[in-house]
Image (cartoon, rainbow, N blue to C red; front, top):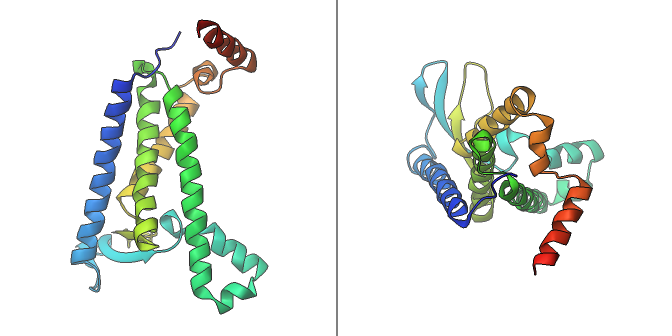
Length: 205
């Protein structure tokens, strides 16, 4: 039987998410104050620089809404660019809230055992990154990016993107090489097991 998260653990997790989000927002504020309206700040010439960018697309400038627009050629959006921008913002906000809701449910199910510590940290990283960029979309209607690897012309990104990307890579690695199929039963228990658990809870009422 796995150990279910306590309220104390959930509070600690919330504090960690808050710290990560605060770090993301502070770096974006600094980028706005010292990089906006100025040329790129070359940290390592020809390799890495700080470059202010207001990104109204997804992480790393990947934008499925714009891709659909290019494929289907919505003439209304061509004539009303502000409506197109608003459509993208609403799409990303709704999508992010949906992902956060699902992630909260799954995170609550991840056991506290040390074996599941990587999975817990991965969930926290994705959660913090999603919230960091969600705040930008709600407050500014765009996301502030400023890290740029000019050597490989990598899309400009921010701290929240790092949280999500590192967590996603770690998730793939741990799923492929560390966790077994039985480890995921805590997240997606068999239907029969869920039914028995529901009956047990009803019996205890």
